Image 1 (cartoon, rainbow, N blue to C red):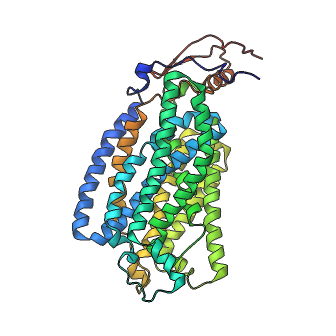
Image 2 (image 1 turned 180 degrees about the vertical axis):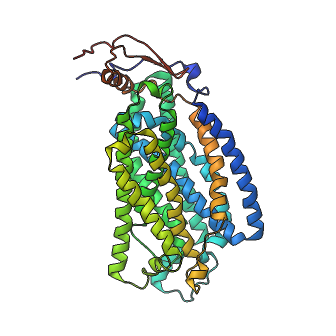
Image 3 (image 1 turned 90 degrees about the vertical axis):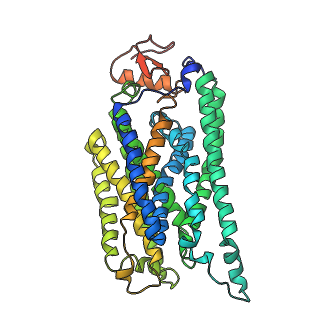
Length: 444
């Protein structure tokens, strides 16, 4: 049996492993304006809090569900990368790790939702029947504010725990080059993916579906999980399109990697459409009074045009474009498709969440409305999120210098380009320098 560490690159310089890393100037130009834009939107949001508190908290929930999706998606895809390997995950690994490190910030940003429960969830002040039917006792216990907060704290504790564990082992591997850390990350990622799936489902149910305590769907959690994954892949595609001409990505990224990302976008887009259509088909065919109001309120009045917008630009347009090999191998076009998907994720969440607050009122055409704060709040949270994400991205080298797969990826890249001098990756400067042939490598 061959030694899995035989082709491992030399350990990176410990002193530089945690220092700020050089990034593309475009990211530097994005970071500060994003924070300024977020601060300006936050001021407008505070004005909205004073003017209309109900609308503020409803819009805040939409914004939070949009931005929490990317850290959770990063954590899940990071675990998937540790399980499956492949250069697509290797080049995205630092982005995924930086995204997972955003979860403590999202825990802080969750506080307004916990404090504003009374404006978001009608069951927090609903009167319970006395005596309470036995069939309803569990639901009222589950929807008690104290237990709801406890579950939310538990979700964040699990997510942050996995994020810190994987990031800590990754940093230790950078410092020492010890292959055992790679094995630990792989072993944890299997059960971790299962637990992340369960807790994300619970969070989607607790934070959104319980707005209407009478409606339920067994596919709700899966729809959110796939949506979060789609947002994450779209974000990584946009970032890689910005960075791929710069070191160290210039020495490893090819159009094949963008082709792989395009295939992932296509697969998740199809899965998102399949799950949403399946939910609609099951509810339509069942025709149960407790289930049908969900689609009635989302296909009445002007809201049906929002549904049409989501169907066309969240599925059909990306689906048809991503079927083309030409689209997936042209960086700018693929980045444009990813941007469209990311924007439509917000519209999809608006369509899913906002009508919950109009149910029970008539006429529906006048009650379901999109407020300007539904866009101001995502900008406020997004400005802070983007600034913090780029800050986290700069903390470590863009490629894991001691990952045992990095040497193979560099060698494959230069074989593809008929350049047999495989370079050495310097984690401290983020650059590659010409190097000798790796030992034991032959060229055909």
